[in-house]
Length: 116
Image (cartoon, rainbow, N blue to C red):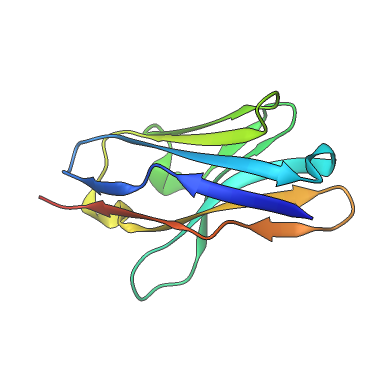
């Protein structure tokens, strides 16, 4: 089992920045991919960015050039640096981890609101 705890959400003005963190605990030795997903109000949950244990990252087109995902394997933590935030980035952001034996784990979610 893997437990994920997110932090760093909040209210920010358009054009501002936030940094999300997600700390993993438990059977962390087996984690391959970590990532961030988001669920905007009234919509489905979609991919934001993912990163492998070797640091290879992929992003949704809507966040390319504005968001950066990174990972500190020593601290078992994944980060999402969000810059140039837009109102349409408003969502609940979820941390995700997938392990080598088919496990798929989710954090509890953290609210990000972009509004003036």
